[in-house]
Amino acid sequence: MTTTRYIIARVAQAFGVNRRQRRMSEAASEMHLLREAEQVLGQSVWERVEDVEELGVEYWNLRKLIKEREEIRGKLAECEAVLADAHEQRSSLLNAKSDSQIELEEKRGGLLADLEKLAKDRDSVIQQAREIRRVYDGLKMKLEVLQREGTSDSIDKTRARMLELKTRFTDLKTDRDRIAASIGEGDALVDIIDNQLSEERQKHRAEASVAFQQIGQANRDISALKAQQGLIDTQMRQLYSEIGRHVSRNAFLNDQCRNAAKGHIPMIDVMRALRKSVAMNHRLAGM
Image 1: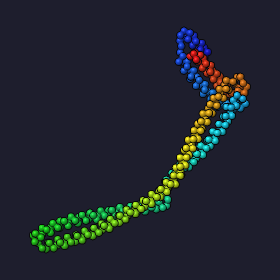
Image 2: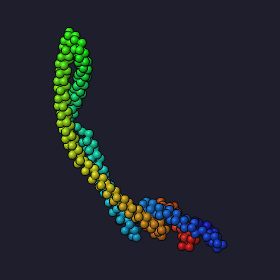
Image 3: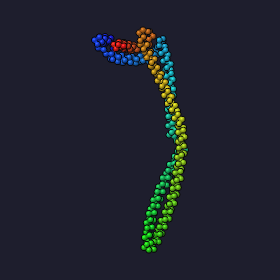
Image 4: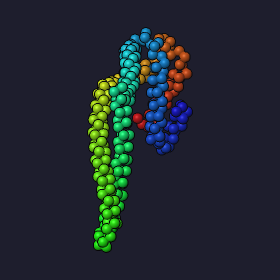
C-alpha cells in the first residue's frame, strides 16, 4: 500500500467505508513476502556480518550449523554408499548359485527326464495289459460257448491262445511292477536332491541376511541423519531471517550493515516499502 492509497482509505473510513478484513488479508500477504525477502537477504549477506556486533550470535551459530550440516552430509553419503553396496550384495547372493547347487539342479533335471520316460513306459504297459485283458475276456466267453457246442478242435486252440495271453499279461504285470519300483526310487532321489537344494538356498539366505541387516541399519541411519539435517536447515533459515531483518532495517543507519548490504539496496527498498505498507494496513484495520 502506498501513502496515497492510505490517505484515500482513511477518507473512505471517515465516510463509513471500512474494509477491515481486506486490510488484514493484505497485511498478512505482505508480511509473508517480507519474511521471505528477509530470509533471502540474510542468506546472501550473512558472510559479511562478522563485524556486526548485534549479529554475533546469529553469525557464529550459522558457522557452527554449516559445519554440522557438512558433517551430516558426509555421513549421509557414507550411509548411502553402504546401502547401495548392501543392496548389490544381497542381490548377488540371492541370485548366485554355487557349483554344488548347479550340479544338483542338473542331476535333478536328468532324474525328472528319466521319470517322465518311465511314466510313459508304465502307461504303455498298462494300456497293453488292458487290451490283452479285453481279448482274454472275449476268448473266455468264446470258450464257454464252444464247450456247450462240443467243438473240441476250436476249444483246444482257444485254450492255447488264452494261456499265451495269460503268460503275456503276467509278463506285463512284472514290467509294470519293475517300472513302478524305478519310479519310486527316482521320486525318492528327487526328494533327497530337493532337500539338498533347499539347504543350499538356505545358506545363501543366511549370507544375505547380513546384507538385509546392513540395509535396515543404513535406512535407519539415513532417516535419522535427514531428520537432523532438516532441523539444522530450519534453524539456519531462522538465523538467515534474523540477519536479513537486522541488515535491512539498519542498512542506512550503520556503516557495517551498509557494507554488508552492498548490491542488495533495491531489495532493501522493497522491504522498507513492505514494512510501511503492513503498518498502514494494520492501522486501517484498527490493529
